[in-house]
Structures are given as structure tokens and as C-alpha cells.
Length: 191
Image: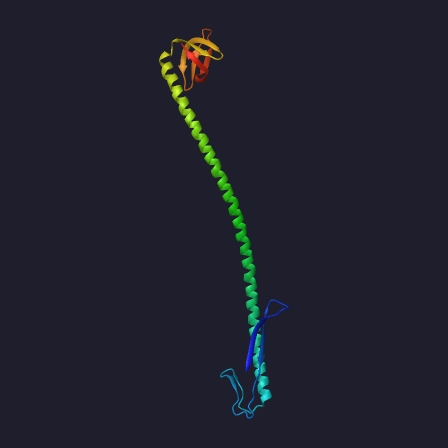
């Protein structure tokens, strides 16, 4: 009869195997016990129960030692994988934090783009309105190039020869010979 238990030692984290073996010897050893046919045969000589038990105990201890060595190797490999797992968990947490920061930056940029788009649309609308007003000035003043005009502005009245009509200004040559550039938005009226 044998009793094998696998427990965890209180003094360390490694598993411990405890094995109890009871060998019952017959009163007469008719046939010697055979453990494995090729490797471990008990000789055909008559052995006493104590020598048979000792041989079995030695073989059993060798097997136990091999199992312990295998368990140590498995435990070492497991510990290495556990260290790797902890390392990768740290890497994942770091990447998650970086991802959250990048998402915040993307959200901020998206908000800024929306504000800039709104400002652009307002400017475009204003330019369209100015273009319509400027277009009206150009259409009225272009045929009058080379004629004398009087332009009233907030700075005063200017009289002179209309030399050119630009995109958003006119050029007037005063009788003194000075060229005056007047933006459309400074003109109050023209006569």
C-alpha cells in the first residue's frame, strides 16, 4: 500500500511531496517482486523481506528525487514566466496610460480644429460680404478712371484724377501731384 500526497511547505513556496510506503512481505517469498521488466529485476535468489523493502525503498527514493528535481525545474520555469507576466502587465499599463494621454490630446486638437473651422467660416462669410461691397465699388468706379472725382472720407474730402481702381482701394492724383490711396472702407461717398 502506498500513500502519496503533494502539499505546499509552510517555510517556502515550493511544493513538497510526502510519500508513505508500506510493504507487506509474504512469509514465504515464492517469487521475487518485479518492478520493471527491463530495468529493475530483483534477482531470483531468495531475499529477505527487509532486503527487498530496502531495495524498493532505494528505488523509490531515486524516483522521488527525480520527481523533486523535475518539480524544481517546473517551479523555476513557472517563476520565470511569472516575472515575464508581471513585466508585460507593467508594459500594458504604461501603454494604456500613454494611450489615454494621446486620446486627451486628440480630443483637444479636435476641439481646436472645430473652433478654427467656425472662425474660418465667419471670416469667409465676412470676406464674401466685403467682396460684394468691393465689387460694387469697382463696378461703379472703373468706368470713371481718368476723370476727376471727389471722395469724402472721415479724414476729409479729396478731389483729384481717378488713376486706378484696385481690389479694395482707389488711387487719386491730387492737383498738387500727390498720389493718394483710399481704401474702400474709408469712403463715405463719391461724387
